[in-house]
Image 1: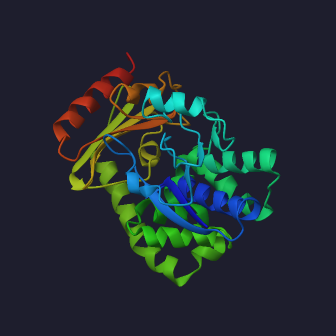
Image 2: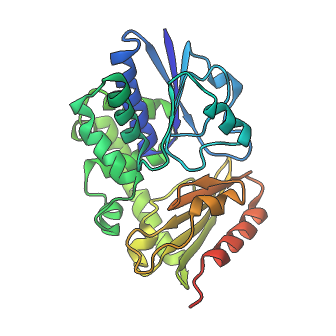
Length: 319
């Protein structure tokens, strides 16, 4: 019995969701299942390849819906969960009892755990710490920007590794470890420590770069990193240096996409007035009310700059 899990790649909640679903599935559905993992990334156009659904059962966690008939399980909590109205209609017509959406949940890991308990009678106390941190990280429920930028906890250090790691096999090992070990135990391993040192060095270099590049104007911090290949960065760095801002908009470029990231400051003195998911949807992106993104093709840099400019103007306060 082969289970394929497609999870939100380079995302702590995506990885946590894969681990939580794995433990639930093996406890309640098929104890002897062989589980395989595929990271899935937001990109321009279709988010899936047809050959990704190669299991006897296939699950998507913390990522957009697919109407592919081979999809068996689905859990998501994003407002922009559907690539098309047809996909949404397909989901609403589903009667399998194995596909779930809750846009009010702060994390998908917490959502999976809740559904597993309420509908399938599954609960595993060993997952509590992981679920709590996924909830904090994906819901941006930090005590302060310093907590998530200074990375003092095991969970936040592991988050940096997950967000920066390019080898899906290494992330797969982390997922499997999360089903068996505590966060502290995982972080103490020699493999993780070897990964962590250069990642922390890169993180603090990025902190310095964003401090140098970022510009604040009328409630919005902006910066452009497209002169470097940057796939991700700690999203709370702008609020660390600009606690007065309400929004952050950045432009980055990697080998597979040009990305506009849009976020809101959880500690902002002026509250958010825009639904960021709806704003990003105007440009083919999506996300949550408080954070979102637009993914374009790698060569669409000028389009990205224009979209970014329009988004920034939309978000700026009048004074």
